[in-house]
Length: 437
Image (cartoon, rainbow, N blue to C red; front, side, top):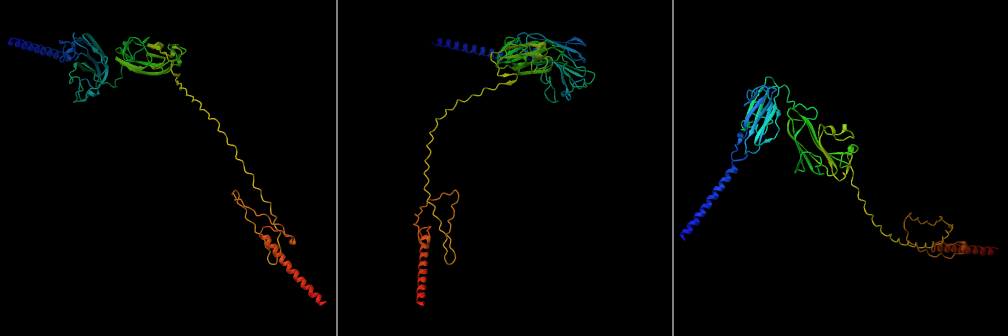
């Protein structure tokens, strides 16, 4: 029993030991090799077998003291086997003086540089730059170029960063003008390492037959040394899925990216493709915002690569977007006509009472009396109905007629009384006359 326990314990110990050993080996490999196998050096040791060739001094193992103004400098080097990619750069600057001075280093301007961002794997490689014809500085470094050095006291220099492999300063005259940039190339110089990334996933060496509506296009290329050029990448909405000179003027610029005086090195341009029928052009020279119907008004003589395609008609033609048709509203149901109520019968006008003759004025002793006239009703006022008393029968006394039930009676009685009194007086006078006779 004791023997079995001892054997089990021994087996467990051995297993733990093997696990620890295995873990230690893998941790060592992952933590100490960023550029390749276990035998790959680190830092500047990745760049080996360095040599330089200059126009004025030929081949040599260093730069210092072997470079002159206006030289062409070639740096050759190798990257060991079992190593990954490493970025290496060669750059020349215009400088304010013939020797390096940290106080004025920030006045240096880049004159020429090797392809930006380029990396190199195991094998032999070379980079080249031109040197300005005035005060200069040339640096061969691991990593990327510093576009502006300094200022003094900062770590924005190659040496403090531990990246300087070789360098040189010199020149015999001041750079009287700022960096003019590279000399433009004549004609359409040949680009190298041209590739097209379509939709962010597919890489092709030529556009023709590969572009799809609605995707992105990114072209990456290398401009040759000692040259600068103008390039443009443009996409257009097109009336047809193929190119014709007759329909070219109907194309409408959709997206573009262009650059002028692109220096030697690796560069890229990107555009989006319309989601309808299209044309994409990568060409030398300037952008054409509109295309013509002849070779002199399109990219024909300076075209690098192009493609046409798409299956859907674009909504814009000749630059004028076609508005979406306005939806015609459905006709609203007209409600059935409402029966117009029969007109209200206007009541027959109440019989206007016969006009009562206005009685003639009666002359009585004293001031004459006149019957007051009732004021007229205001225009537009609604008058309450008035019940008129029936007219009184005409009176035969003195031919008078009554006008109103009360006033006429009073006048008739008053007149009769007067006449009776007059009669009595006359009769009395007659009796007196007989007695006298």
